[in-house]
Length: 99
Image 1 (cartoon, rainbow, N blue to C red):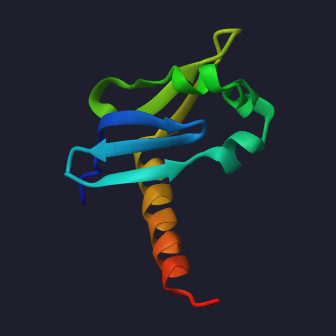
Image 2 (cartoon, rainbow, N blue to C red; image 1 turned 45 degrees about the vertical axis):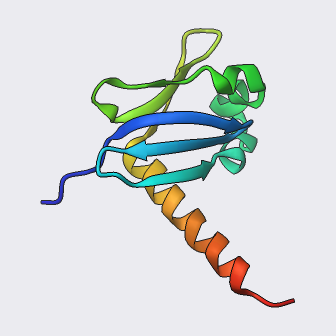
């Protein structure tokens, strides 16, 4: 079974966007704005100051936030990696298109 990469570092880029470095050396940008726009538990992250206040879980399994009422908002490393890779592919495809 393939070992899942863990988050080593994460950096705020702009509101809703993080740059993440995984322990296998992959670096990617992940745009979480569509996720945040869904509301519900993610409403807390719609405030830039709240979004900026994330932590990386022990062992790099996820990135998370703690809401006003103490609710935990976690996004796991594997799903963040998948989002980052898919968004990079889409960006590359768009860059090659001729309008």
